[in-house]
Length: 259
Image 1: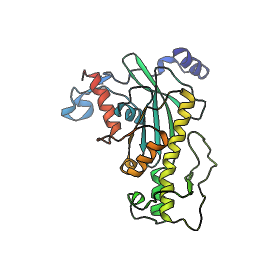
Image 2: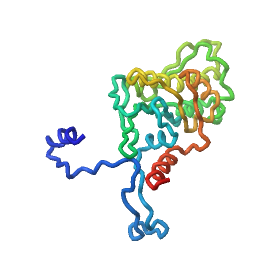
Image 3: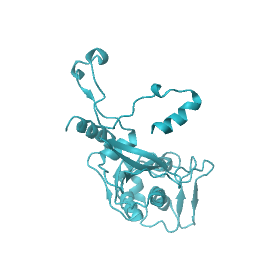
Image 4: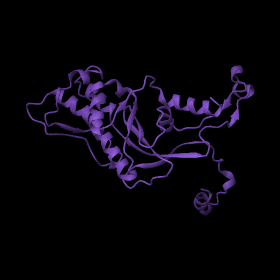
């Protein structure tokens, strides 16, 4: 939107000519030269994909239809859902973003991030020494939380609340609870936070979640994945190839080359 860009740049005396040209996510931008790279085998290789980290993961997860989404379960969580060809301004604490552009088709998404997911399990392992390895969280977690819940707001709450002053808490604890209940609550906390972000996405877009395509270390935890599916009432799809960001960049590059 050149008018919008001009409105932003003009007060600062920034000429439009100084800005980079807007390009699609998948097209040939340049061709590598040996004298630039110093690598013989890269001579003539086209540079043909530009995607941000999470956007590439969405593309690599083949979330091409509105309502298809991805979530990366790392130390935190990074959620993004395809909302189609219309930009959806968020009124519920999310980020509206361009997911990707292929040819003349611009696809938009809503995005939310959660500060602590896998890092909560790391905290229980390293700081409280409840477990020896992350996978023990599934082994020792109880079948039910028996009324114990955890809010892992160790660094505040991210989407959709954006409360930097929030702090973590464990509620509902009694003398009958043990480490298995705390481990269960920690795993459930990730799923609850994911559900909260997708509730905000639906409130903004009115697009129902069709499927959640997941990646990251947390996907190895079958208990978490099943509980997540229960919480969002949608299929959770774990890919065979976990490096979905690299896959997305490769897919986009291949399309530009006619692949």
